[in-house]
Length: 211
Image 1 (cartoon, one colour):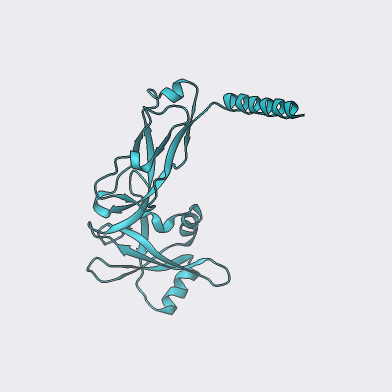
Image 2 (tube, rainbow, N blue to C red):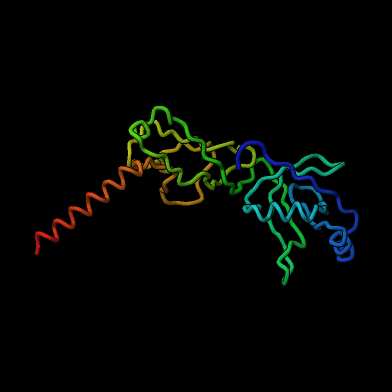
């Protein structure tokens, strides 16, 4: 997740209980609840098709939303649970949690590449392989970075850039403990093929010599 926080427009749900929830589903809506933030829980309902589309895109529970409800102030929320039908596996209820500015959450942050024009490996014909186009970080709700900037200006062919090479935003840390690769400069495919062919010829020659 990077850039502007996506809006999530929902409706306030006037009725509560199983009867109201069933009526919402008959109307093509999914009932839900917004809790936390030192205020009362707010029953809501949202469009079934829109919710299903977002769920199928993936990482719904790792996306921060700007929740918009008519008659209420906008609030940042994150999904905490999606209840599904036991047979059809379709969403039947959604729980959202309001976030305080100090709340720590896990989010996927897009990787932004700089230094491509200066990169010696690319100048020699190498290819940039962005191993991780986004990185999951633990961040503070008030300080969510728009992107994770990596500088490849010093990479040669065969070099890797790992998470330890990146200056992380204040208060952020990677979810994964190990030093993982984010980007690498690979040799041109033609050069790789030539190297493989040369190694094959050397192996054949060695086998011939042994005979």
